[in-house]
Length: 175
Image 1 (cartoon, rainbow, N blue to C red):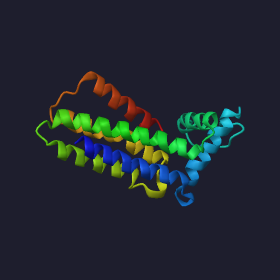
Image 2: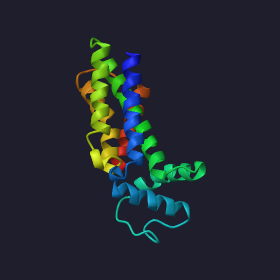
Image 3: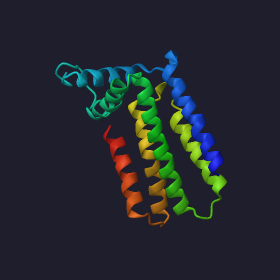
Image 4: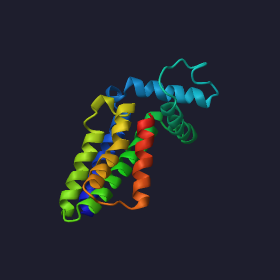
């Protein structure tokens, strides 16, 4: 099981890093949001000096990879994609944990297959749209879908897990 999880993480990590250097996978909306985040770090105000109609949360969140990229001298898209990859990892861990509690009779290989499917839906299915707000919403809400199904089936989730799932879903829905 550990070998399968490690292989999956490495493959998805390779896809995410490759997207950071492939010019045709660089989404124009993600580029604009990172550009605006960079300008915000320079002191420009959103909706005043930066003309934008989207809600502010995606810009505020994007200042994090922009600031890290500046501090480390790295490409913004690479840092953004790596951070989004980390969120995919958290999402997959939460899905695995919820499913483990709700379907304890399922085999570990079934769980790994399910998590691999979720990861592929979150990383590969969006294609050019990877990193868009809708994609981030999907990544953030996926554990909530599994948790809601588990609760509807009568399974109680631990408070910490419920908080983690709810917090991630709340951020995704706020986008």
